[in-house]
Length: 328
Image (cartoon, rainbow, N blue to C red; front, side, top):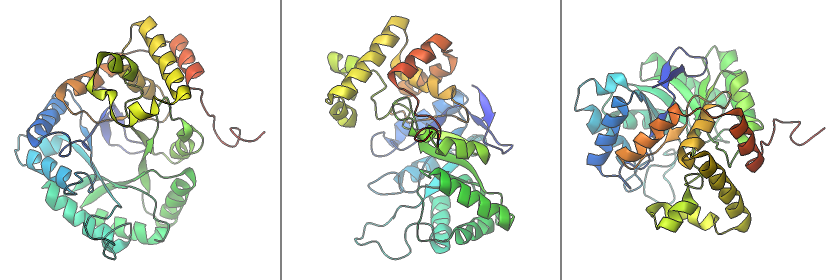
């Protein structure tokens, strides 16, 4: 396993991040525990979750992870644990006031609830799942600083933030003497490259590690056309709907044909490509099985040639950094 430092911090994390969103809704607790054991066995030490994961009920995924930690064997000490806050956790409609978003009150409440579900005394990376347009940035940092002082969280990160918000958050942190954001978790893959315009440059400027989610773009980059031909399980869902669009299908067809000529598996190449991108700490992989995890780990061994990278750029052109991407 390869390791790197998370952004400007001294924290060392694996170059693959274990995503746990499937734990509960799609993967049983027994299988989830087996996947986490396999991840540790492969050297993956960076686990990502969110308080809202589990869907029915919300928080179920954190509970599954917590019961895995409770088995002991050094599991918690070996893991860099990341979770998130923002979405409403209750089932009532409308949401009860102050039970969502990034007020100091909800951040404090959410941290305590996550700690209980996760059966731990601290969260290594606490991430804001979305921007909150109604809460002052100063209030957010006041809540974070208090939690850091209490030892309940160590670092703060963002998710789905635009470049300007990363700048605002970290400039406000600088004025306050706070450490600021250390990571940004964003949608980024071969097919969806808009993060290259402003989000990734902002992250690099402020020393944030970039953690891409949906590295296979919902399955589009995982060899979906061949799987459809073979009647595979991944032929369904959002990716199967997108592939019905002619323009999408043509690009994915070209992608799969290119990799077929090189004798390379599409899903592993999509992950390996992200590992070549400047500023990227490591992509989040969300395996439903231990076999899928093993495939993701194999991506670390792939070395993509300059020729192949150029061919990939022809199929999925880079959007370019702003303002050059849309101005002279």
